[in-house]
Length: 133
Image 1 (cartoon, rainbow, N blue to C red):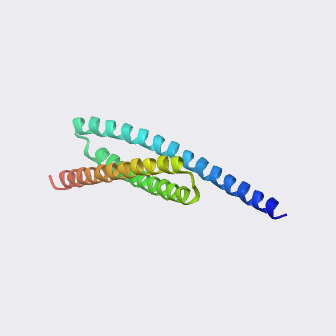
Image 2: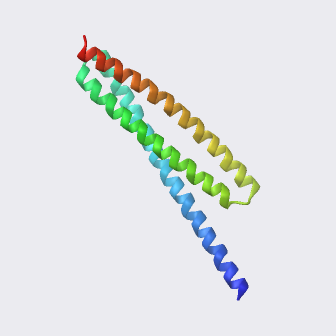
């Protein structure tokens, strides 16, 4: 009876782990999609900068800002899920891989924060240029 209960608990834990990994994969795919959109927005932004269309540029910068904030939120959620997985896993090799993944995500988060700062500066510059020529 006790063995059956323990087996059931282990099965439940494995199911939870699988669910967490699936959620993590889904979030990573969403992150990839958003990064692709970000790249497209940056290309559009460069084209607009060459054309000097200020209102459209302001709107695009605001959209870029919102996209960056969304990316940042997704990265934080992925990071929390990875930390939760680290708490659940006793395997050393998998633990090491998850720690490496966590470090990569932290690096990505720092790069996004830097990009967010650049977009904010561009937004401020565009705003000042448009409203105070």
